[in-house]
Image 1 (cartoon, rainbow, N blue to C red):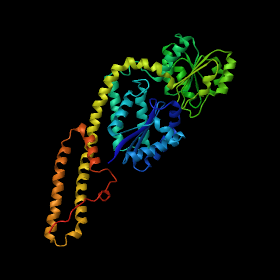
Image 2: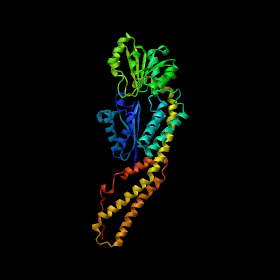
Image 3: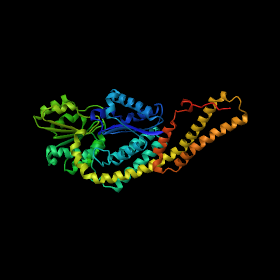
Image 4: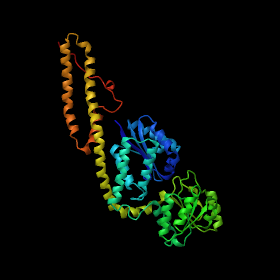
Length: 439
């Protein structure tokens, strides 16, 4: 029986130093998904890799075995021992896994509760898995339902009011550190992706004109500069721009550090003691953590935004409760659908288990029945099968009558009680103790 399993780490469970090592680049993701479904017992896979989470949603035969294999693969990705990773990892199964994905897609698990960008991130992760051909019936149903739930949450609640995001929180932090009047400050944005655009928009609302620096996507940086009335320079001009800027916000997808402590030390010397605020929104980080120790430098990464985020949580708490109610409604629907997939296979496995017990019982006692006629042998077999049928009749009726929201949990319990999980065969069970029939 296939099960849904999620294994992951997020900003709630693992520090940025661990998360940045778990990141899988978009260019490598198809190969990574292919390697996942090549693991024994892993049939389907979708991976969500963002600045705040790395989560693997897989459909598996044996969740315990699969969890161990996935943990080992994540440890290899991070370049550390599994024991170093295990404290930051969580794993959930079936409806609990689905509930978590619904909450992620709805923005309830985001650092900034209600952020809209996560819906697009989940959608892109699913589309990439479709391209890699690593999805299947269960994961397709799960992700389509999760995306529909996220859309419903944003339509029926105000959880995303104000377009709050990590980028907007970063701008709030800059205002707190530098002062309310950001419009007079020179701001440099390193990067030209979605986060850079959101940052530019939030700064523009404060009357700030920004300068964009991009390496690979220079054309997009120029387009963003034109849209927000700023400027754009080449990556080679970064040192000179750092000397002139008051605030630097970095958000690239580079797998390597772009700004080291030695280079920044030279910049700070040229600045003549003027302070510099650095906000690094990238995972992996764009700015070397050692820069924090330089005189005049204030460096914050995404994990340092928590104080700003707590204010947002207070404002959105009521809307979050509404969103959670919607998630629970949708989970009941998914649980009912999951249960319908399991009823007939579970009942068939239960019936096969009973037949196997009878067959084993008859075989074990074959040598004790020399005096029985063929007619009597048939009667004994019929009696044994009738007893098993009567024993299974009531459970069968009750399973068929289960309410949709109860099916999955009850069926899982039934499979565990009767040893019906895949890979468990009748011959592996202990033989029944049967006394010889009296003549």
